[in-house]
Length: 509
Image 1 (cartoon, one colour):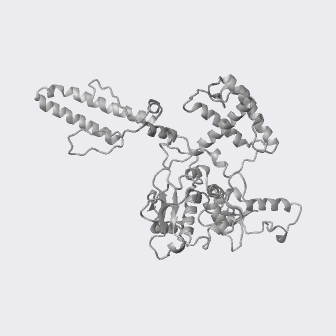
Image 2 (cartoon, one colour):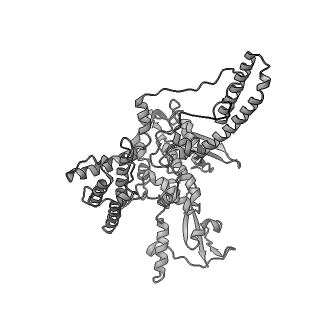
Image 3 (cartoon, helix red, strand yellow):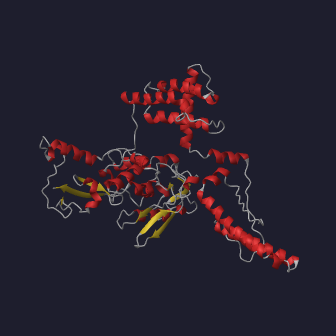
């Protein structure tokens, strides 16, 4: 401790820029500095009294004060509290690492998908440079030369079929080249997408995007949402046999993907049984949740993710297809010798339903988990072969269709902005499209039920208090008008994540 009251706190785990840019750390340092300044003032005031104390006793007392203060810092900072009866100073622990380990940690900042995309974009640009008899080592080119090469490169990009790439692919190639230049070992202080030195190449890039759209090459494919009829099949009692270890695992996988809006194969193999917990809320309803935050595409674990604390829940519903019921059964029948959640199921003669353990201790294969939804689609005879990521897209569309606000959906999907969220819900569902077509055709042609499969809506139902007319059909479930405020003029089914389809019909008077 310094007698003048100056305060200095350093932790080797954070860089200087991170200390300077994090407001929470600044506030923490200021508060601890204030505490130590007060402590130093009291210490100066006690100097006269301490002069009357024997030297040995004074040193012991001063040492105890320092130990008490270090202990308070450790507690305030979130470290373990020192033992009450300990007279030794707390030693900091450092685990030595090799250069190879440090390199692997640094290389792990970018995801595998980002690395693959970067490799593809750089390779494409270098192949073009070689074709033009230019030096493929473009990393040290001046901004002006690089700008000129890119201006020529963008309009000549073609796929193997001599067709232009899609908008998203071309944007990815440009971003990959920029990432390659700004990442180690080159660390160029340039941005080929924003710097004025690259204005002519970026103007050419925008022109190429427009040209691609005119030529019908803008074929960005989004993962299809699961249709209402297919979601009904997935929620039926006969979709998954809970006495079959493979189908039990498929159901738990589907429920977790749907309720937690998990992205494709992201962290699927690394999920552990101990990662989940089951609790009861204030209304006595049971739910399962993930106990810790994951390192994901939207939240890679950087300093900006320090406030990421959302905890999604999967509630029990008391039905035969209850997601918590099947989840508990999987936990009960899994092999306790390995903590992984998705284990290889016992099959054939190795399996007996009366056994306590239905799974082997080895983790399920990557390729098998990658085609979980396609395999389920084929087994149940769904209308199309959905991908794993289709389940996440379905979560977004179902919640949006039921009037859930975008910011609430983002807490489930972990998106950082609404723009990214909208890409999952850009198209109308099949039922809406059928209804829209029926409305339009009804203006000129009286469509029969046999002709198009949809009865034209007729406003001949009793009026409710909200000024809407509710369908009197016994097959309809009446819900508050606020739940369907965006769709009060059409009679279409609205889905619920857990309870399949709830038919809602409201017609304007």
